[in-house]
Length: 173
Image (cartoon, rainbow, N blue to C red; front, side):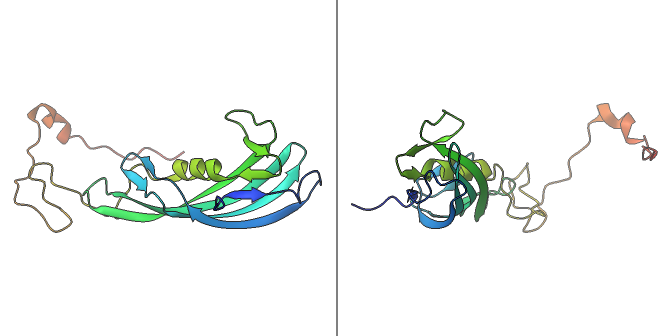
């Protein structure tokens, strides 16, 4: 039987106020998907955590990181990167749903916490670069490769009167 990568034995911390230790773990995570950004099934996540006994249980503070992939929101080219999420969560024997995580005897499973922390940090609309010009809305050409042959968009005559307005910068107070 293989050990789950994010299950930690904390018997040495239990009921010793102020006792702490550092854990560095890595292992595969299940697939995650937020909009068009995903973490592949089996991608390796790393966790660097400080575990500390407090009155209510064990406090886990640290970071979790893994690789992600997705599509640029402007040009639809594949994009990838690394996401790092900070966490500070309490594990206690009688976990409060949605507030703390369960401490089962002398073991704590960091997997649900790692998953939630990473999901919250995944980019919702990734870009291949801040200067990405995107696709032409008319012909679909990639404007990063150069201008397309489409004529410039004509302005709407109903708004023509606003073209002559000059707006001054507001006074600085």
